[in-house]
Structures are given as C-alpha cells and as structure tokens.
Length: 163
Image (cartoon, rainbow, N blue to C red; front, side):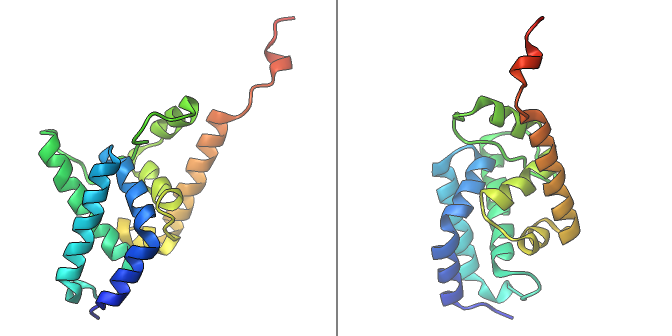
C-alpha cells in the first residue's frame, strides 16, 4: 500500500515540529534535527511504495528518521550505537532537576517518553516505530512518569528542617 505525496505532505505539515523536537533530543541539536527530518521525508517521498500500511504513516516516517539520525551520529562519533538511541534535552534546561530526572531514565524508556511527549506520537505509532506492543508503550510511559514523579516530588520544607 503505497502512500501518496499529499499524505506525506500533510504529515509533514502537521507533525514537523514534533519530529524536530524528538529528533533534537536524539541528535543534540535542533539544526541537525531539522536536517534529519528533511532527509527522512525526502527518502519517504522518493520511495512511497515502501510504505505497506502495516503501521501508521507517522511511525513509518519515524523509522526512516531514526535510521537517518543513527547515520548522522555515526558520522559525528566513532562510538558504536546500540539498538536504541537515547534521547536527551538538546539545550540547557530551564529546570536542571527535570533534565537530570529525564537523563536518569533508561535509554529505551526515555526514547518512548520523548516520542510521546515531544513528538506527540500515539501509542500505536510509538509501538510500530519501536517494534513493541502498545501495552509495552503504555507500561513504559507509566513507569517513566512514576520515576519522574518520585524524583521530582516536592520536598516538605517543614519536615526537612532540623528541630
């Protein structure tokens, strides 16, 4: 089931910012993320017949974008990449505690969290893009949220004062 240029153009218009934010977390740069998004959509447009309709269109393009991001990282770093690229905040965070809490998440869980909240992908899209079940996506997001809530829970000032 090939996709049309119009469908890809609509996806680009609707989701460009989400793709760029999520990819910036992976590449470490909004400029590189922009280039990765451009290249991913160019590849999708060049071979729309490769889309078989087994997953949402956004997940298929995300898979392409992830491969492009891996290629980009290989050029920048001689270190081998694992199966999952970890996501991180691409710029100094306004909230260093949040940044550190996000960095403390395991790489795959962090990636799923970023895809959901930075790229605004659905559970189905994340599942298809990562090759996991929607239940695993939901569990991973719940575990990430619980870990972040535990790490970032407010300190009870009254209890933290010495008596």
